[in-house]
Length: 330
Image 1 (tube, rainbow, N blue to C red):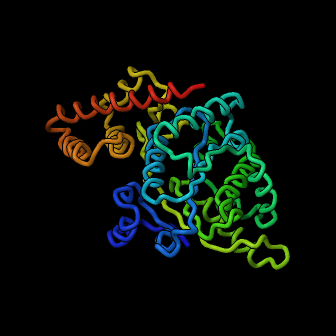
Image 2 (cartoon, rainbow, N blue to C red):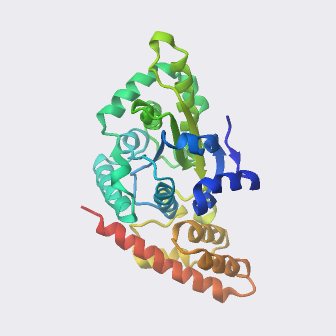
Image 3 (cartoon, helix red, strand yellow):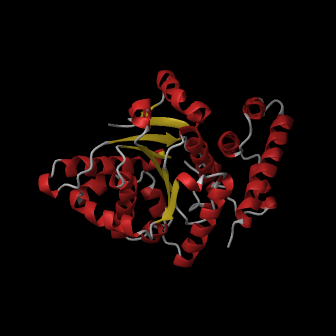
C-alpha cells in the first residue's frame, strides 16, 4: 500500500494515539491499525540513523521525535545506527563511522531515549546479519531497482555512493532491521523514518508476504507493518532536504557557534523556509514559542526585526544541542 499524506481525518486518528507527536509526521502507511489498543501489546517500533557525520538539524528532529514517540507509546523500540550499512553505501572512512556511531549512541541516551525498553545497536549485530542472509532469498535485483532511495541520483552526482552491490547490501541490512521484531515474537511493527526511506517498508512487506507463501521455505513470520514518515526538513540554499552528505544544505552539531550563526542569520531567501522548519521540528521549543516564530516568519519582509530575533534564539538553542553532542564524544 502506498504512503498517503495525512489529511485532517487521518491526522485526528493518529493524534488520538500519538498526541502532540502526531504533528511531526506528514505521511502514513498502514499505521492506524497497528496503533489500535488491541495491537498495542504486540507492537514494536523500529527506526535508525546513518553515522556518516554529525546529526544535521533534520536528523536531530527525527531523534527528538523518536524519543517523544517512545514516551507516548511506551512500547519496545529498536534504534539502529547503521555503521556497516553506511560503510557499504557511502564513501566514508570506517574510523569516522565508528566514532560517529558511538557518539550517536551516547547522544540519543542524553536526549532521553529509555535504554530499558530500547534495543540500541549497530549493524555489527550477529542476529541481524544472519537475518539479512536468511531474507535475501525472497528479494530480487528488480525489487531493489524498483524500491530505492529517491535521492540516490543526487548523492551519486556528489560522488557520495559506494558500489551498486554495497547500496543493495545496505538496503538488505535495513530490511532485516525492520523485520527483526518478528524474530522476537512481535505481531506488529511500526516503522518510523523519513519519507525518502519508505522503500525499506515496501521491501520488508515483500519479504513478509513471500516468506509466508513459501511453505516449508518460509520463516514462520506473521503480522503487519505500519509506517509513519517524518516531515522532511528542507535543505538550506534550496536543496530538497538537509543532508549531512551535502554540507551546503545543512547545519549540523559539529559546527561551532559562529558557523551555525552564519547560516541561520543569513538573509538568503531560499534558506528561510528551511530555517522555520528547523525551528518547528528541531528546537524543542513549546507550542507558544513556535507560534511566535511562525508569526515572525510570515511578516519577515515588512517587519524583519522579530524574525531576526527568533533566529538568534534558535542559534543559541542549536548551539546547546551542539555542546551536548560534543560532550558525548568518547
